[in-house]
Image 1 (cartoon, rainbow, N blue to C red):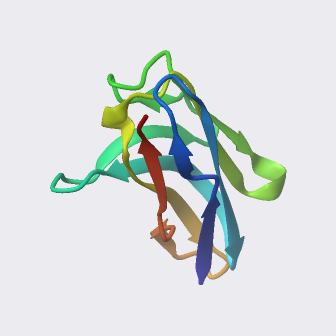
Image 2: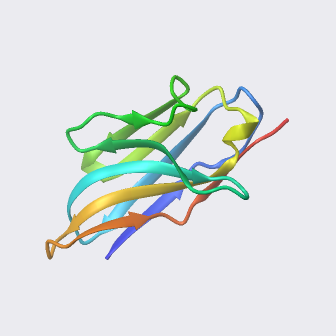
Length: 120
């Protein structure tokens, strides 16, 4: 099995910054992609940013220029630097990973979610 553990959420004022982190552990053979999604109250879960292994970053239009995704492959980790935060960024943020396990089974895994609240 694969576990994803997120950290870094919290309360921040508009215009502020937060950095989310997510570490994957378990029976990992290869990670094909890692990313972040978010779900605001009453809304569907949506993509924020993804970063495939050896590929290009992909951002939601609403966060381009403000958020930056990065990976630490040695630690099976992904980070999301969020700057110029807006109240509409308020949501539960979920880490996502597409993983091939040591028994060569592919799967998509999710973290438990971390709350980000942008409010004055």
